Length: 267
Ligand SMILES: NC(=O)C1=CN([C@@H]2O[C@H](COP(=O)(O)OP(=O)(O)OC[C@H]3O[C@@H](n4cnc5c(N)ncnc54)[C@H](O)[C@@H]3O)[C@@H](O)[C@H]2O)C=CC1
Ligand SMILES: O=C(O)[C@@H]1CCC=N1
Image (cartoon, rainbow, N blue to C red):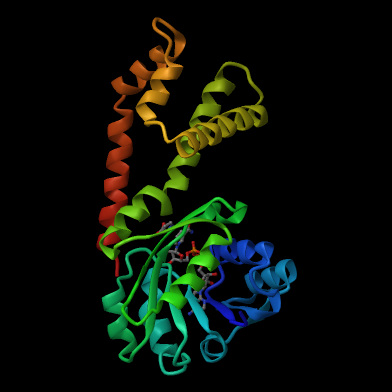
């Protein structure tokens, strides 16, 4: 496994992925490359992970076997125009941008190109990422295994039909943000009742982590787990009733719909 992995665009998501790949020892840091349009983040990532950095996107295109396009979605056209004639014949291009469809980007490359569309999330930084992956017809089973292993360096993966990618963005790509809002609000409630803020974040975050683990590890329906916490005439059902009154579930569903719609209409 002597593949070189390159990142074009070295912001929050690329950093989370690079951190996971380096810490898992999947490949040598010296075979990971990153380019960015400004130097500050590049110098930081080179110092933190001992990877190779450059301000030249073409160097990544010419040298790497896997090229991750980790710039913002609106820059895909510009960056693909710049690199399309320099990507190696057998290289795999991985698109992680919200809303970027395989077919549209095949057209941008205007040549035979192995394209992977993936939607990771930033908990990759602590090895708890969730990534969905779709591929085009040129991606081989061996390529898929490599891409799977790369994303598994920092969490779970599932191959999905591309039509589900917008839903994935709503449920896992973007959802860490809304989960942080929930944790922040939980902590605010505890602070309101006298708990020091730092302690409140620990209690709130650990409760959310534990609840998530219960679903993943027991396979029990979330409703049944909720019922097991809600003693008849007890404290929890008061909170549950209050949340229902405020439209909590509906607010979350509406948030996911807004996210998915944005993803569908991005270009
Ligand atoms: N942040 C997140 O939680 C997630 C982000 N994504 C996707 O990852 C991509 C990157 O997102 P973030 O890392 O959050 O953005 P970011 O803004 O933190 O990073 C993008 C980087 O690209 C650099 N850049 C801009 N133009 C460039 C160019 N022409 N050549 C090279 N580098 C250039 C910027 O300087 C910046 O450092 C987006 O397409 C986003 O949809 C996907 C899943 C989760
Ligand atoms: O907010 C965004 O557009 C990106 C995609 C998923 C998470 N962050």
